[in-house]
Length: 536
Image 1 (cartoon, rainbow, N blue to C red):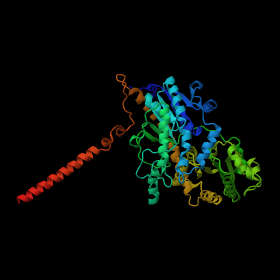
Image 2 (image 1 turned 90 degrees about the vertical axis):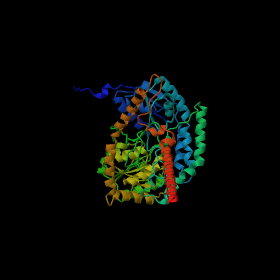
Image 3 (image 1 turned 180 degrees about the vertical axis):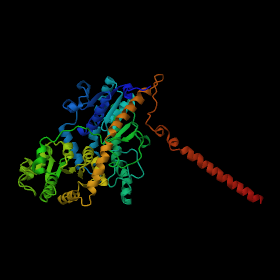
């Protein structure tokens, strides 16, 4: 007997808590997009975030699936002064030069654990969620998993640091500097990658002690595992995809499900006129993200190189996102003139020139989706790279910290653009590399961009699979609990080796038994040979 009922209608609907802390809206966006999919499946969605960040929900009709009464504050965010100092420290640090200065800003972000932990305790006790979906910055969500047995799905912008190593990827996962894999790496690059953790030890050990002390002061006296056998003990959802990420074997609890993007985004609005003016077909879009501010000298270099491109008519327009902090760096040369312009820089900033458009906010996806956008000059943040590939735009990347540096390597490896080194780049290099990408003499950039665009579009459907996995984890935890003894079955996506002792998981006992058997056989054979020899 057949039925037209949707089988999903028979599934129980539960409460899911979304969590986003430091890092800004780009970190919250994929979490909220997964929440949208889960809300459409009938689940109740709660949202916990730092104070003032509630505006992401309250001012955006796209997130109407979250009721204002279901928004819970986690505590105060970074002050503007703290935020500026934090990102300035990140921007000036260089992992190749000094591990300590590169690692120091991590204390700022991780110090939020105490506040996040206490607020999440309160929220969890009050709402009893069946699942937590969180940005990877909010480590305290894993304590909720530990203490309450609530399954956690953590969204990472790239493959998690320090987990799931592979023999073909030199060094600790997530900390590659010279090469993404051993395939094209030199022997010296591979040696440096393997020795890098030893060099970082004097920085990492004090940090781990600090974390332990912070947790003890909050009354938490256990350590979070999570990387037993190099694997997560929660659902790790990576907002990236193979082809950008270096392929490797992953356990079921670690899945590449990106790019996680909304089907809706703001339109061009006033920029539409800019594109239609002179029928622009080769526009360069420049955006270094919310937190990066180039120095005055770096701004001058980019202005000069972009002006050269305009003068050569390799491009016919420049759109540059310039926030208040970045605009200050233009002030020392407002009266200077740059190539490819008929007005001084100050007038360009006022959008008095038809070829230049400066704006504090740009509808990035609409710009990248416009057929007239030919090149994206980017800091290489995860969201920006995902969006550029999804919309099929070549890139020139200038990364400053963390995944931005790795994404620069990935962009080059995928053949969709080139990268600049923040410590050494020049105006001439900006111009030369932009020219190389724009001219595309062998058509490799356009071909690879189209290849990656198709892959990204198909892979973007995996956000629905991510929602499936979240539901699987939630139902597994809910119905895996034995009410008679309070015990829960092991996670169905967790490989059994992480629950075994090392000797059993690695079959060391079998190796030992096999070794003893071989040795015994060899000994017996030798004894038999000696006995036969004596008899003869």
